[in-house]
Image (tube, rainbow, N blue to C red; front, top):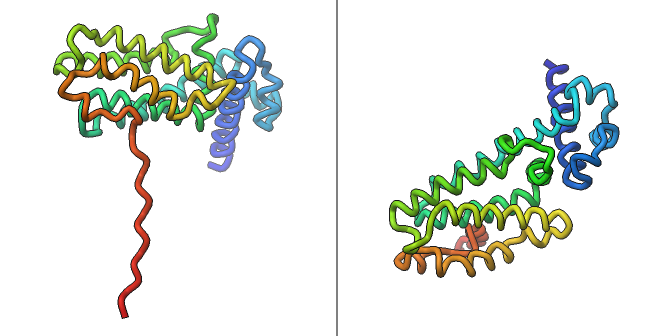
Length: 217
């Protein structure tokens, strides 16, 4: 059991180190020695867990897709207009890209021409957006003449663009940029009856707890 736990920790350290190196240097320039050094393990330990750099990249993308699936899985449970769920998910994704090196590395890998597209988190993200926006279109939540597929492609392009720009300047991943995008999109995108209920700022942060009142003497 101890050996299994140690092996699992080593594998996770290698995935996170690989994601960081892929995000910083790109897939082609990343070396296995740099990844093993950043993970704090030997080259032999790396090759024990992963046969090649491609295998490491596959593991990064697979784990990122699992984390992205958790982000999108919470959105359908939220009450309110379908478009609000999409808005909230885009903000949550940007926050995750700020904090999660595996997601950042996978989004960087997805922009590499040599990497396969079917395992890309971009594809998973696009499929979720298309499914949610098609439901919005069918239920009249989109403005007349707005097509779900076109809107999904626009949002994928915008969010991937923010991820690419955020690699050099993390401010691109902040809430103000995504809020500004939604402020520009919503007037032409949302059905008129839903527009007043939509928050371009995404999910509100939790309100601070009220101070405890002292008992009266």
